[in-house]
Image (cartoon, rainbow, N blue to C red; front, side):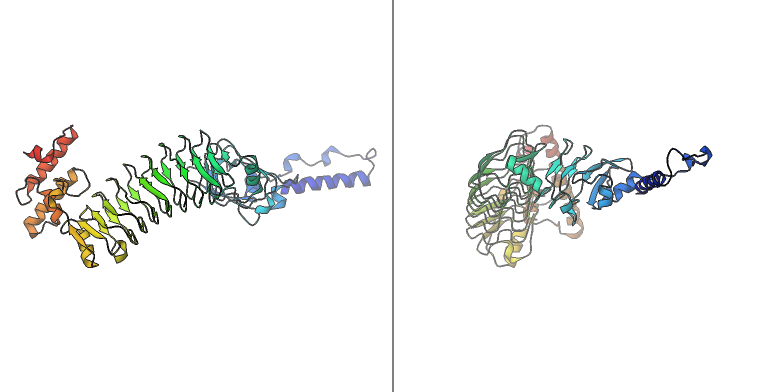
Length: 472
């Protein structure tokens, strides 16, 4: 601000000179003039920026604008304007992102014109401009990520909706909350932003192009009139609560193979879905993922799933039976609570960690598992029905019940032999003991471990015979 004061001072001096001394009669000596080198103009552009913004240094050496600070004397010092041009650099480094809620402050109502975002910015955080009063925004093509509710409750968003109910920026569908009827998302869109269709009561169907890779959190949450949607084969991300409360969604929904996690509440209360096809390669089913999906009568869990979260299948009131594959290592609390029609629950991993509470499995469900398994221990502790599986169904060599035979199975078998030799207890339950005794000698020894490792090598080179035939 020193430069501004200097300018004002110089103008004031000029006025004094012209009014008190006639210009024509004024005589001066050049030696009286100040040496221009003695004039110190202290102007630091970064100091000016700091009066309007707070910056955060990112791990990549660039900066993020983390907070907007309104000051009429610093934001518009020379030519008052409702427009705002966000700086592109700070301390000679590019500004590459606008942080979460950065402009959503008590001063957001001062942003009334056009906001121009520089082409150094690649990311706009969640609620970044929420509640701003600006009417227009220039977003460069460099922006590849836009957080949820970035422009929510702004006249700018209202203007964009008036032009097209599908508000798309750089192939990101940012907002569709005013769309109606059968919606066809144009080809080229790669992302459905979080909350894009949130609580839209007028959309009845959505057709997504093959270009869509990501559906954000709560994207279709509360779309109670939505009856049909397709999930493109190239989809790799499906956010929390993406289809929660889509009560009219019907038929069988196929989840693409690129999806590795079903996040929390993703299909919670999709009460009219009749089926879900889960993909091979799925590793996690999150908390309450399929809670209250009342019309799904059957479901197949892929043998790649490792964890099943809290309440994942609770209140699935028509689900009659379910097999939890040997790959599953943990089952969360309330997982099968209030699944009234679940007559049989088969847990194939004898060491699966079942949450230690009576509400994990509905009281009248019969639990099937191997003798000596955690499934049996859980059932007996809480007075539930238990039925032992036929030990002959156990896959020889698959000691860890992962679904595949690996060097780890050989290592477990060898360790069990060592424990037997020193303590008399192998540390394996009955099902694992059966799987480890591949030569069916009646006891576990280093020969079993050797057979398992040799068979693994045989499979790795293209072998197709069963382990029984391989051993002979």
